[in-house]
Image (cartoon, rainbow, N blue to C red; front, side, top):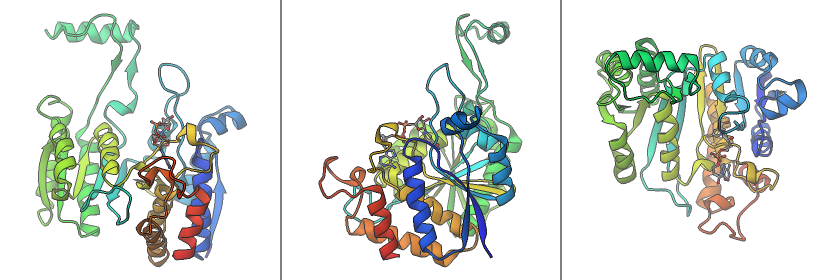
Length: 358
Ligand code: NAD
């Protein structure tokens, strides 16, 4: 049976690295058909919309998608994050970023094997923002002032952090189920409930409640600032980490740094009936078109996709191909000690090497 996968190349380095991943997957022999869809800048050029409805329909119909990174304009102008909109519209409520230190001359810290799991629906990243001096912002500032916490000047812009027990329980339950399926020993909830009692406090309570129903798996708690230092110094003490949206974005980059960089860090987003696989890094606009970008992160994300659709043998072959390349020091420039290392491979050369070895 042929399995159709939605392929979203994205922009920047996205088209080059997803092309490399597609060639690797096609070489596994798994019967895949690719339904190519555009979002972000390429979609605006085609249809005027950053997230056309046809993309959502394609992912819902196919159930799985492989995606390249998509740029988001920085600052107060331009369209809002298409990544956030895609996750919201498809109810991709949780993101998993595995950070595994793979042997090789690239600078990976020994013993790192972390699964960073984050909610993707709430928190500061939900995009509830009020422009400075807007009527809505003034109302909130006035109401906070009435509650005797007049710490916000009247000309402040507001980004609102919100958390519900329901979404927190959902992501915590996912983390314990995922940990059990992968035979992992411990889940650590990451929070800052000492300061943000009404939001992170709820997240922590929900995680404790879910942990109480999953006593076969270890559980502990860490404040997010403490965790950052701990991961740098003692990452081997940690296993599965579950946390609110924004901490997950930051901690997964930190964890990726421990294994050599975001260029080799894969990721997956899961929701009811749909899954979307993408590397942890962004669109690296300055690298676009140079043929130098590291495709390992998206190739490993594609391997997660193969596992998800039950193609375990093909996934294992892809992973072993990537690991063989890294072990031999066959890598793109970002994994070399010097950025201008003449032995650095190009994007497609790396993919060819994986195909030869898998
Ligand atoms: P970035 O990850 O694109 O780049 C950070 C650094 O890592 C740069 O030096 C870049 O050259 C390097 N890099 C990233 N991926 C690489 C790869 N595969 N191979 C070699 N080097 C690589 O982060 P940024 O610069 O903060 O963001 C650029 C754009 O990407 C922004 O518009 C941002 O919104 C977007 N972004 C998208 C996603 C996504 O689609 N999931 C995630 C993060 C950022």
